[in-house]
Amino acid sequence: MSPTHTRKGNRLYRYYVSQDVLQHGRDACPIGRVPAAEIEAAVVNQLRRVFLQPEIVIGTWRAAREEQNDVTEEEAREALRQLDPIWEELFPVEQTRIVQLLVERVDVHEEGVDVRFRMNGIGALARETARRAA
Image (cartoon, rainbow, N blue to C red; front, side, top):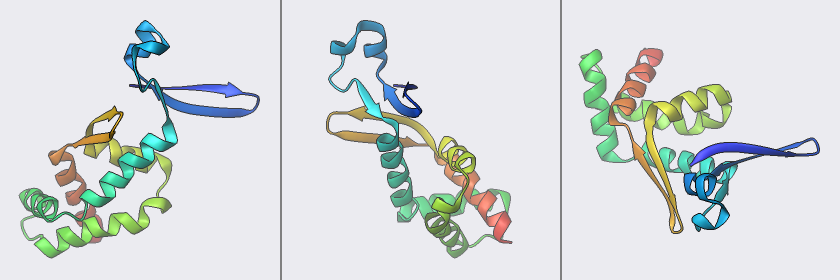
């Protein structure tokens, strides 16, 4: 899917549209267009849940230790935990940077949204967060 937008009067409507729709017309894909706010909220919600999963915490801790040998598992867990409550306070540019760092691919289908994460991105974010906390 590709991001696009349209204007009606002074309002801007952002959405994602399927490549099939762009190339072959409206009937080429059952999903067609998805409002940007909906898909972006689904991706962020999955990110927020992932930050608390034990295997992500362990992977993050291991990645962070490669750069900063004395990072503890609890520090990695706390760094990931801190992202959730401050997410809404981040500037949109910073939110976008974090999502691009962490998300490899988003697949939208009739049953929902699947997000594929970049493990090295999660490690990079944890190292960055650990440096800021130190």
